[in-house]
Image 1: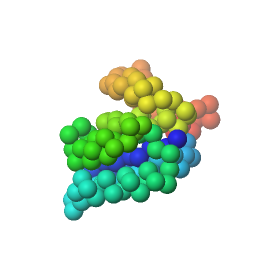
Image 2: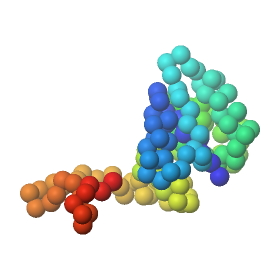
Image 3: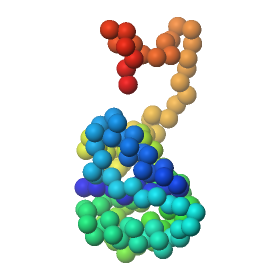
Length: 135
């Protein structure tokens, strides 16, 4: 199972790179760059190419209502098994690497959205027993 990731600019590519830094996984994600000179039709051409080569289960876009989202929705109308998900982020794609469903990944991403309370009693950086920074 794999996923098409698409966002404005090179956002999707950078999400894949960041995910690979953490998990080592890149192959299940197929990032698509959406640039100023592209149309929804251009994006759909990219989706068609990727779809013909891989077992794609979902297209994950950055924002609802943007051209990547609209192109994904148009593409999905001709492909009954493709889900379209908005809210592309690292907290959304990481659970997918570990075999979670889209629904579980969405829940995890929502639960991860919170303000971090930093007080004098809390450390800004976590230290392991050797005193090195943890990633």
